[in-house]
Image (cartoon, rainbow, N blue to C red):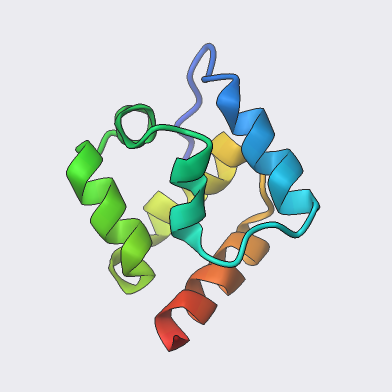
Length: 90
């Protein structure tokens, strides 16, 4: 099974989950409103600049990237992918 678990993660990911549950997310790039791109990039093992490009154009995200992002934010994978697909369509 693919897993990227770390001992601890940045506490700001909790804010992402709460905002997601409140329906405040329309685009994946909004994650960087809560978690700095440098932290997100480090946790996903991707450079900060590349993570922004991936979130701006989710068609470039791999399934492993989506799984990791879902694990970090504790957002259900299918919901995260649905927003990514909407981003691609717009």
